[in-house]
Image (cartoon, one colour):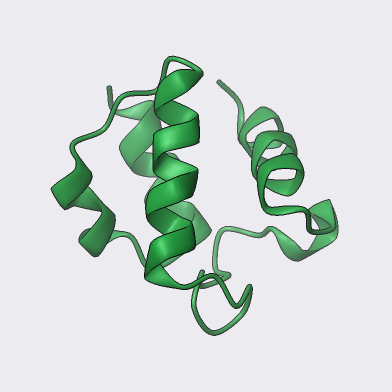
Length: 73
């Protein structure tokens, strides 16, 4: 999966503009996504075939962190 594909999925799932989704953007401070929404996002991505251990959610701070974890599967 390319970063552009990942970005489109996040924009749709989080209902935010793609332009806000950059590798350095933090879920909490830049995108205002709290831990509950982050877990919901991870569960939705899992439904789409991107499984990741739930405990990894706490290691994800930026979009780049999330992309790296999902592409290392």
